[in-house]
Length: 111
Image 1 (cartoon, rainbow, N blue to C red):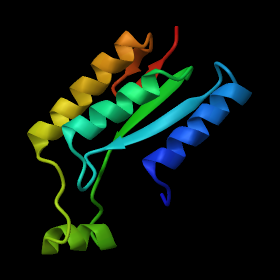
Image 2: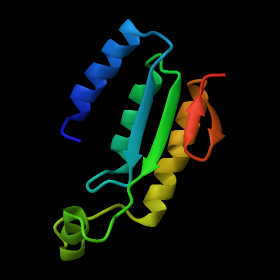
Image 3: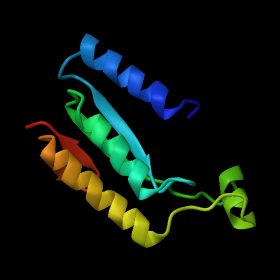
């Protein structure tokens, strides 16, 4: 997607004002250059908004895509499997504290 974290946060804030309690967010993790500290910051920021649903998606590299080839050539590096696991676990903890219940592997919702 062609947007920054700052722009996404602004859009989420506006959506929560216009549609309180009716906002769903999709988040990707395991992205190139993504680290645990920034992930926790993003998830914590999201948890302060009045969203009612969150879906988490781990990056899947598809053979034949530009990103796949860039990663294979070393242009980008994706997080390690251990880091990806930590990111997922942190997301679960942050969403639970925000009152969103995990009802599937990658989905959370307000009860």
